[in-house]
Each structure stands twice: as structure tokens, then as C-alpha cells.
Image (cartoon, rainbow, N blue to C red):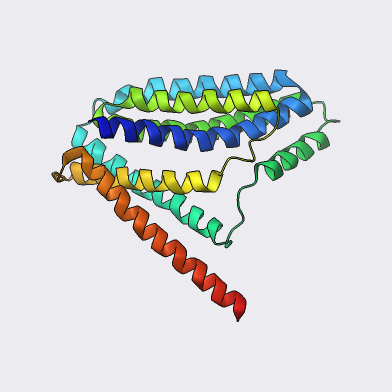
Length: 246
């Protein structure tokens, strides 16, 4: 049980950290360009919507048999985790560009500056903050529910996500700049491994499988995916290197 609690909190924290960093970049751009009032209003409204979603859909999960929840959540986590892994590997090999918070901040700041003459400038700025927080927040909620609900650990997952929000906000507001030094792709790679591992574990349980070692099987599943991903990453690097030489 201890291993499950630790892995649940860690997965929720790391995944939420990545999402909150991306949302914070937009909110910071709004705050520094148009003022903190539209930034806080947009963020506050998005948080209210997210809270409403949790209050509405959270209790509904309790009405569904746990085996069905484990299976559906497990499959979704596999798809979600593999998407993060795929993108992390492609970014590591240079196939697609790394996500750059400084670049995203500059682009958002430029877009807000172009709207300065518009009478709806503050409204549009608040809307940008609202959309950023809502979209990233929905992903955070999904991750929290997915990694926590199948074992009754939603509270622990929620605390992990809350800790990520507090850390990002504290660092970001202290620096007043995008958190561009965060190794975002590495975090996404690790989170992808964790979510995929959870997904396989919950899918198996939903199908009635009994994992050897119970919850400790999560560590073995994680190790298998980590080794396989590392092999794929090395092969991709070699392929790119050969292509560059030719």
C-alpha cells in the first residue's frame, strides 16, 4: 500500500507540475502585459469551473462498479501515458521541437500587445488566462481522478496536485518570469512512464488479474516500460545520427 500511495502522489505531483507550468506561463504573460486584474479574474473563473466539474462528476464515479472504473481508467491512462511518452521521445530525438516556455511567453505577450488598442483588450486577456487554466486544469483533474480513484487514493493524488500548484506559483511569482529552466520534456517522459504503468496495472485489475506482489507489481511494470522506452530512444537517436551522416 505504501508503494501505491507514494507512486500515486508522485505521479499526480509531476504531471500536475508540468501542466501548471504551462498554464502559469500564459497567466504571467497576461499579468505582466495587461495587469493582474484580468489575469486573476480569468484564473479564478477557470478554477470555479474546475471545482464545479469535480463536484458534479466526482460522486458519479462512486456509483460505477470498481472493476469497470479500473478497466476504463486503465485503458485511458495507457493511451494518455503513451501519448506523453511518444512526444517526449520525439522531442528528445529532435523530430519535433522541445516545448519552450520562454518562446510561449513571448508569443502570448506579443499577441496581447497587438490587442492593446482593442476596447475588449482586458476581456481578451482574461479569456486567455481562463482558457489556459481551464484546459490544463482539466488534464490535472483527469490525472488526479485516474491515478487516485481506483484505490480510494483521490485525496492523496489531490494533495500531490495541490503541492505542484503551490510550488509553481511560489517560484513563478517570486521570479516573475516563465519557468523555462524546468526540464519539462524529462518530466513528461517520466510521467508518461508512470501513467502507462498505472494504466496497465488498473486494466489488469479491471479484468480480474491478480498481480504477483500485489501493488509492488507497479514497480516491475514501470521498470519494463522504462527499459523498453530507453531502448526505443537509443534506437531513434542512432537512426537520426545515421540519417544525418548520409
